[in-house]
Image 1 (cartoon, rainbow, N blue to C red):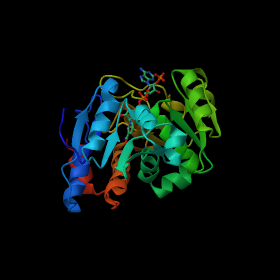
Image 2 (tube, rainbow, N blue to C red; image 1 turned 135 degrees about the vertical axis):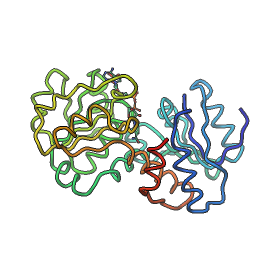
Image 3 (cartoon, rainbow, N blue to C red; image 1 turned 120 degrees about the vertical axis):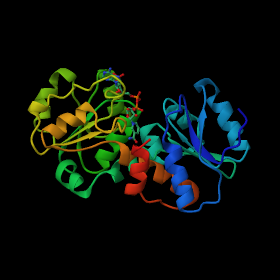
Image 4 (cartoon, rainbow, N blue to C red; image 1 turned 180 degrees about the vertical axis):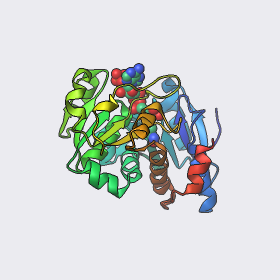
Length: 275
Ligand code: NAP
């Protein structure tokens, strides 16, 4: 593949990414003088070779998605503090012959939250993170930045312990069997696992045990209402899906490359939800 790319998303697979819709919407809205934002599928084994080729051919920047974020971290020559903390890069920028790595998922998650949710459910409150993958790393950092008391629960205990060690953030790891001991005191529950995608269902939480003020967040945005969020809705709990996070992390990447922080809008949310 020898296509020229100014900005785009690289992943494996990347076919279902909605990032081009978001970025191209803003490229049009802000009349940025650049090419269309594109999708680049690359086998992880060929990642470095392809990114080097893109760098040499004048690419400005790339978003990096599953499963290449750790590779992108090791490939970048300079990383922001937040990228260093998470050990993952979702935004590569090529400037002055160098490769810079950033992680905009952290700020994306933070900006996706309403002020009231932060004040009432996160700051100085117990926040439960389900999962310990790449997205969980960003969410744990974000919740800690917002003053949350973080609890991490994952199917594979070792991965939760590894996050705790790698991030160096004050947090507690909860074994799945012991979840009922903390669930009733939790003010914020966020699903960062991929359970809820396709035919899978997230049954980690017994919603009969949660308190009535808890806010429930699912990073998944397609489907818009996972069964996990349906369970929260049925109990009249506050809830939200991952769409705003997706748009906010994209906005921060857009700012890094084009020096404009684009605005989210109902129009854009409707376009993306309609895909
Ligand atoms: P990842 O690194 O592959 O991590 C997947 C996580 O899901 C791990 O904690 C894994 O547990 C858990 N998991 C997978 N299958 C499971 C099962 N059958 N039972 C229990 N746990 C299971 O993926 P990621 O990059 O963190 O992404 C996770 C989710 O977040 C995806 O749905 C992704 O689309 C979404 N996401 C959304 C945004 C957004 O902007 N809205 C951004 C990033 C990611 P183990 O460790 O035990 O395997």
